[in-house]
Image (cartoon, rainbow, N blue to C red):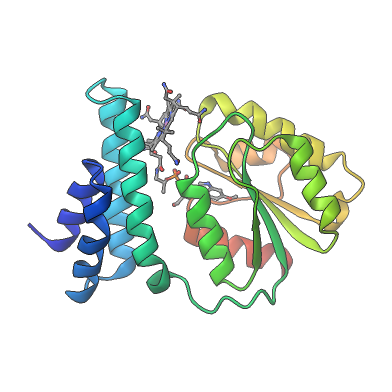
Length: 211
Ligand code: B1M
């Protein structure tokens, strides 16, 4: 079994305590950090999601897999993110109200930070008021980045963007959205300025939006 397959197996099985060492071994063996992230972790979470959908596993197993992935990302982080300067300005990021998924949001935050932004992470299940308040408290913020992972929280994303679109500060900020069920069409429909499919393209988009 390859080092990356070992990481994937540990993530799938939720072996949080062992994942860090396995990621380090994969790095030491010369594996590409992006490949470890994609094949060893993101794809493994896809397998976990499929098993959940097929009733082969349940919420607790998804939770331990998520914890394992987070431990792996901690080891990987210095190898993925570099050059954090904050020079491009502030980005507020959040997972919208009703949604507890944060792994994708955290990866997006990490990539945006390493692209040169300062990231203010409001966490998960963030109500609209809290996002508006954060922008008011940070009048120099350039981008609000919103993540939604559930089809059931797409309306929450829509409401959040609508509230931002109606706010007096709207002309000073850009709004970008993403997450597994989100599409470019949905982003356009709800009036966001941009959509990206994954964390790497989110960083490219953020730069484009302020460029
Ligand atoms: Co949940 N869950 N979950 N879950 N969970 C999904 C999303 C699901 C697809 C699984 C499935 O059924 N196959 C399904 C949603 C189905 C749907 O919406 N139709 C689902 C469900 C149903 C649920 C619950 C309702 C289950 C229940 O309680 N019965 C529940 C809801 C809780 C809530 O939020 N209110 C729930 C709970 C959970 C846990 C808490 C147990 C856990 C999350 C833990 C955590 O995040 N800390 C969890 C997990 C782990 C998953 C899966 C297995 C993995 C998610 C993940 O981290 N993926 C997921 C299945 C799957 O994704 N295949 C699933 C890896 C991550 C890197 O990918 O988050 O997609 P992702 O992020 C990507 C892109 O989407 C994009 O970039 C990222 C990196 O490339 N991206 C952005 C994300 N945000 C972006 C923002 C951007 C740009 C790009 O710009 C701002």
